[in-house]
Length: 109
Length: 200
Image (cartoon, rainbow over all chains, first blue to last red; front, side):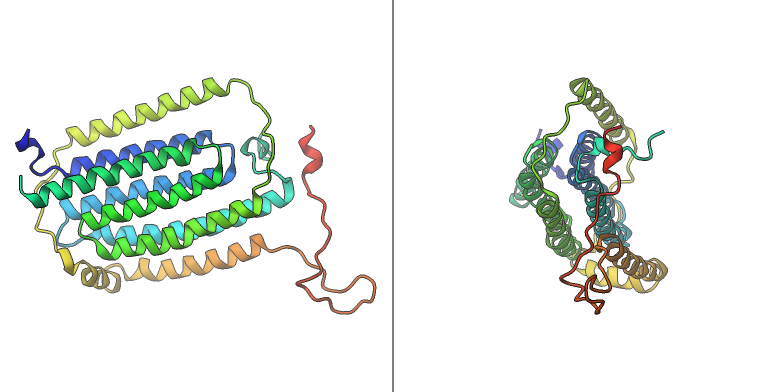
């Protein structure tokens, strides 16, 4: 047991955590009816990806840390995505007076 | 087991519990304001995980950008659109949730299988530790220079796009007197464009 736990916060533990977070994000993305919550779920998924990149950078690529650089870029893109997403949400709310995802079916065939 | 590894282990377990439970709360709680604050907790715990991975710069960036900017932006959006509305009931909601939960569990099982079966190239080269910030700077100005510049263009595009999308239409001239209007005060009365389609 001690042997198993000796290097415990291991790469695999971080990857499990990230996988769990990503799946929770996917479930929220599919099932949320409030559009703001959909954006929150997207942020959760992006964070899961970031945890993956950071753990690879620390355990596999310790001297070049390219994963950390990628994480910085992902954070940048996430900030841009949140800004544009919320702006779209606001203009959608102004036109339809609801944030219910089930009502946004204008492009449905 | 040394005391350092034990501390690391306890920190990891506490932080992952906060992340997972917080994420479940974000997705499942019915009050969206609670969700937004829990999301801030999740972001902070993820920053703690980065500190555990010897990445102080990225942890600081995570706190600044996610907790300081994105979470506040989400809270503002909630304040702007949080009207109490009764959502229309849809048929088979429970079935839909169960099926998507099954799909997500399957995805999780797949990911776990990949994590377990892949022969990771461990242990890798020794981590740089405290030098990480200087190393990130070197990367950004040598081999990742083009993505770095593209990121600045992307941020500019996002800024302009957000302003254009979220701006309200205003009247340029006063309707009665014909003088140039104070744009902050006069707003064009607008009918929601797509309201009539909702009944169909």
